[in-house]
Image (cartoon, rainbow, N blue to C red):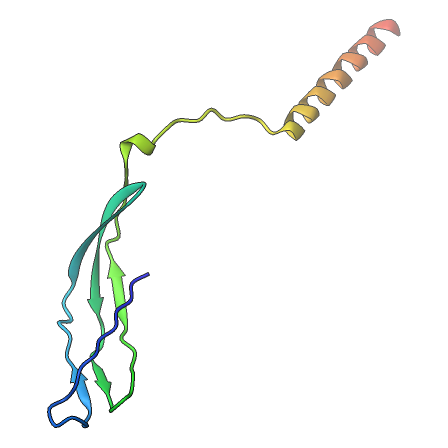
Amino acid sequence: MLSAVIRGTSVGGGGPLDVDFDNGWQLLTYSNGSGTGTFEFAVLNDLDVNKNGSGAVIGAVRYLTFRPDSEQLTETATVPEPSTLVLLGTGLAGAIRRRRTASKTR
């Protein structure tokens, strides 16, 4: 989450204040404990504020990338769930029993 607070005063001390942003795309780089990345951010509107007022600025993000640190990449073996093993075992036991029953009746 990105947030910023902008405070200012207008010439004359009390009239409306117009904040004109550079609305072009800005490339930002970030990193955290698991990797690094980049994205572009742009402010989509300018801000008009009255005395002691506040306003909202809308922005957009594009071209978000993330590259995990190579140390963080580890392969893990898949382990079947216990219920899968129970179903497999029950099926095998049933097949063996059916085969034995069928061979006795011949």
